[in-house]
Length: 347
Image 1 (cartoon, rainbow, N blue to C red):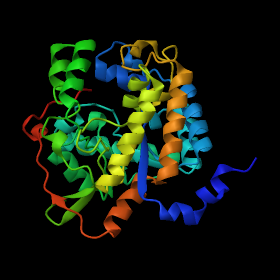
Image 2 (image 1 turned 120 degrees about the vertical axis):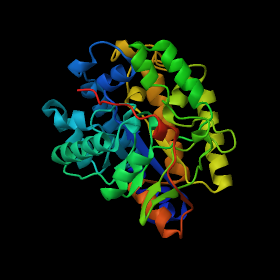
Image 3 (image 1 turned 60 degrees about the vertical axis):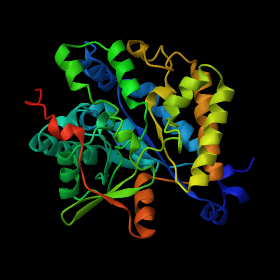
Image 4 (image 1 turned 90 degrees about the horizontal axis):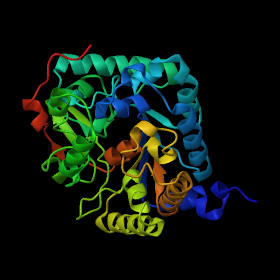
């Protein structure tokens, strides 16, 4: 049986004729989800990497795509995780930073705290994978002027923290309703998933500018016009009602992206590769109770659909392509988080 990656429809000439898209995965570990949700025991750093990462690697290998893996520095610093992370790098995937502590309210910290976290993540990720990150995504899509300033100062090529959806406040309300933790934890979570203003940010790449420094922003794509999510977590949620509904929704969303001239940037999470038996503490997450075989079927269908219609890039390649296309629209940082700095950082 021929390798699908070498058949005419997957040849270099055919790929070059397709519009571009990009793909990434936020490699949030079990402890990171537990921390954000205020669940006890996260400080022991429980992990599901042994179950999730081999499934992720196998799925990506079968699909023939390479993506960007946003790694949490704390995981990279733990010796038991390094073989799994090094394997992703050796497979040819780009390794980027998802902060060190995966503190979902990192963007609300002072500039000094943010800078220390990002520098620590860089060092740990480079030691574990051999790649120094040139891209960043904030935990829970958090952004602030301080965070962008640190990324520019440290020479990052791109940020990928904006998630322009109008349902962010609804997602935050659901999350807080189902999560634990103290009143302070809930206050710290009050900007998770962005504001309504964040939901109106551009879908296409643009540039942040501060003084003479610039940083490419690659938004997580949402449905043009509707601004509803099209990342795989949302598709799995829809698949809980009907896998056919999930497939139809994605197909329609990708058509809308092509009609709008938007190169879609899709997002995965490890929970797409896990059953509830792999992470029972997170059973409250929408879609986690969807059977694993159904999930994997939806993911593989989605990746196949994306690869058939688009030339799938890493985010660094997406950023370089955006820059090569001419001057990008420019925005200056300004966020609700800038007026709500949390101090001190937890120890």
